[in-house]
Image (tube, rainbow, N blue to C red; front, side, top):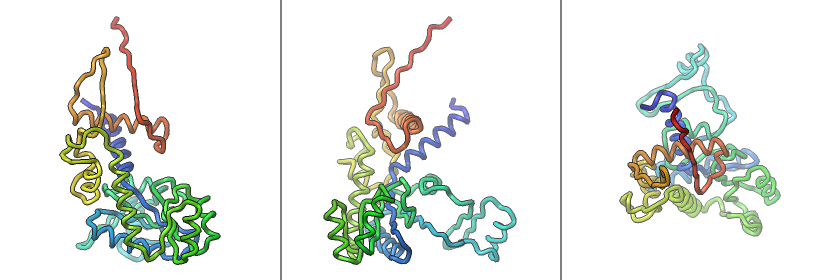
Length: 277
């Protein structure tokens, strides 16, 4: 039987793995008022019409708690968390998060996340809005995850392409949404190994699309985790459901040792039992 500490460890490593199966796209800029929210809402509209289940995280430096509202009064009274439930939605007020990663890890699972802001965060891919070509190099220096550059200026787009960056005009929303969708499918599909037929799909890309559309969850297919156990040189067959859990714990453990940004292709662990006295 797994003790309470073991249950907690398994839950944490399972959640840590979820973030690797959640493509995150940050909309960033060097200045305010350049259209991050307009671009974000347009992308959300196009992607949601494609059937993608997604979440939005917005970074703001404005106060979001009205001290005179009922929720604000509870907050000022000293509550650590305040949850406001209405027929339309549920709002959670709590102390500030320290990073985008922490926000994603505490959310209900979504197969895709659009984040407004969080420039320089080492999570996901960044879509940078640039007004002038002189901003391109500054944005490259500030955000190592810069993936796409968008602008209202044709010259900026051409300059970005000339130095090897993906670039589109701001009004090419359908094209950008298509790039996000294709990239998300590829990212999710790359996390699965083995024979996709064992999971009832023709390819891992097909499973990835089902996940993006909310028709499947990443951990519903236990055969996607190629775990091999050798005891005294003999391969031991284990239940695929058990393999899924063990693989998740193992990946989380190794990520803690070498850092979550590094992903090894193969892990080998040897354990010798001592002689009983």
